[in-house]
Length: 436
Image 1 (spheres, rainbow, N blue to C red):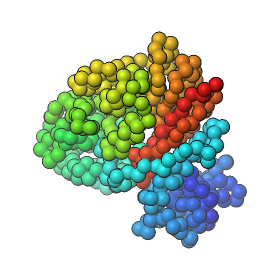
Image 2: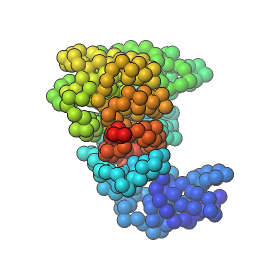
Image 3: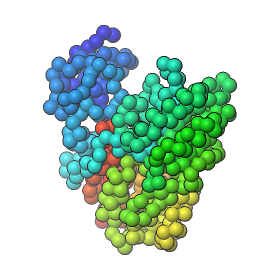
Image 4: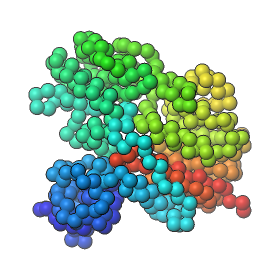
């Protein structure tokens, strides 16, 4: 299909502009509400069209003046003024409530989304495929590498210390003529991950069965800001590299992050806090919604930093063994004897715990999971007075609210912008049990 001119009626959940071409819905990357755009068409499906803006003939006041239009956008929001992103993200939360539940979002107490302290170079972790391009290895990809973000997006969001180090490591692997991964022989460099901690950068190489040259890791160790170097051999087709063993080449076994003047230790397999400043704002927002004397049931606590910091007695249930092990160690080291971290199938554990104990509040953090009917039923039958639901996935959040709406009312709705310049927002919904 040739280039099309259309008017953008609204924004979609992935940050794309939505308009219509020949009465068919069209999702246009890089376009904003109210704009008239010329779009190149990337896909024509039976029920929709996908494209990207190549020319803006009528600009929105929300558009950043330095935006270029001659590229195939990822689903970032770099073309949108940051302060205009916040009401858009608030709208995503309200739209999810309106779509999946019987609550009227216009009648709810929905607070403005809390702005991020940094809007670029805030990410403390990133991972890239190692690819061969124009005669050398690069840490990038020709397609999106993280859900809806391109490699260019990620470099713009990464902490600059990470970016500078990635460039240096890229030069090192090319200096020693390393090869990219070739699945047929299962050799070569496959992936690199870099994370920033208090002590400096943790660098992880994922390789084929040939591993990585010692000359390479020796020069990486010597780089400024590098605190630890690991590698893992992984030739499987999937990309959950935590399943395999990790070999520490240099540095300590764990690195730390600090929250409220206390250090929390993490190993190389631990999930990484992406935007520490706003992660901590998220913790403080949730803590402000919990009475100090409440007995708390926390489901999917991840690394458990929030739970350890709360003054409450907390029973936390997580299905990720690595998260539970790290949370237990941190709780013990910090003297948090009132915090229990339990490993198991969360749906099964919540049934048992809700029958055995009385809780004042359930905190359900749905970052990687969805609330099941079984979980909602256990919370409802045990008559837990208050529930806090959180998620970055608005459909997950809306569906979780819907599972509880028969017995619970929405007391407050908040949003934290942990992912500025992307269409993600972290929604926080507090629900209270009906008196009837």
